[in-house]
Length: 295
Image 1: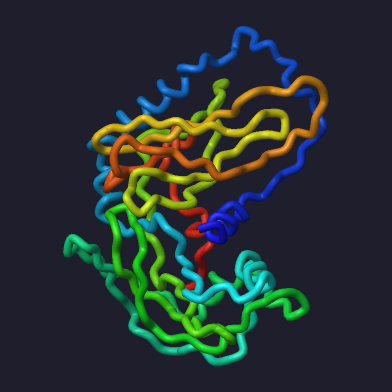
Image 2: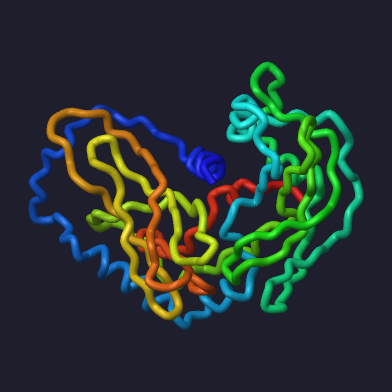
């Protein structure tokens, strides 16, 4: 899973800001008390539990794992691993021009959903975002065929159609889900705005453990603290994550937005409960799904 984590965390752009003093604020009258994170999490849980948005979420297809699976025999070299992580692929072969218009995702409980199928070209474009630069480490795609792969979703494990890309030098294909996620429902609660808070937004989901007992997310923090901490509020219908930072350094330092993976252990398996970010009031999803393009 280390490659998977690197690819997901890599979606976070580190934004360098101005040099500023860190840790010099004594809190003042507007300081947020530590329990405000739990209070906000409760507000989000109360809004979502039993809501129409929660019903829409559970009825849709929302992947909770990476849309891409590397070859089973990956990787043959450090250069190939670097190419995969930087999404630098070169196409040297034809891609199928025709495919069914729609396809089904099927869940282990017997449920299914018919959705538009991504073309091979669109799926390749979503995988190969590294520019196809032959001057640096790259993987070569020589063809593709339509197949299937197992994905973790908000409704449990499912079998979804996937494009299987043949890679030069590899015995097994790289798989890419051939479906877009269902549209996210309109949240029944808004994000935190115009009020002081120690909460920080989550960048996205890295993975859900196979047994559903833990989730790994990317949490933001600055250069002037000791890193992020993520806590949970669990209810029957949701798991709300609320992130904050630990510590504060004194004196001048570079203020940056950083991100790192944090794993949270749950009291019971996630199941079909909605995984939510207390800061935004929205479901926590795989960041890579935001970049899917084409039809």
